[in-house]
Image (cartoon, rainbow, N blue to C red; front, side, top):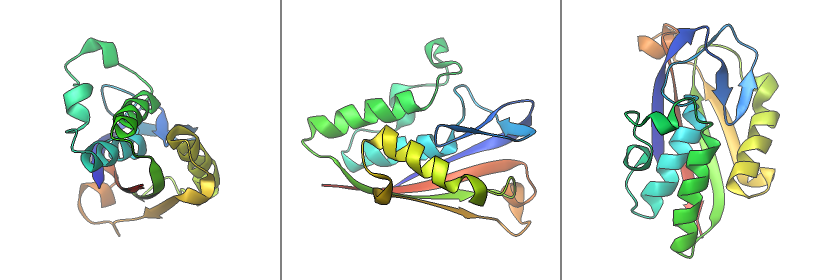
Length: 151
């Protein structure tokens, strides 16, 4: 299981699951701040006992500035493969007030499947609001949970 959260920031692109969405606000972060790929990276690393995203891609390292987060997923998949495992499926829940993700879920699902090297049928993307509660509900942050099954 993986989790990630980033602040919402004016003027940054909004990248979710490797897809740049039309939005006036994006997510603040050292890389592209893709909460889906960050949560998936942590889920993959955790499943093989390989630490977390910060162990490999610290935000203090200028090499990772503005890096597409698909790079992080790819590195995690290398470690999964070294464990002689592969991805069975992935389930992601995005917590956000806006934008509405329903119009983009199919594209995000396909992008995540490509990054994981699986079929889109092996990936599920869900979106939930926080009903106006807390920093996410107030539109100040966005988060994602990811669960992966390795086989």
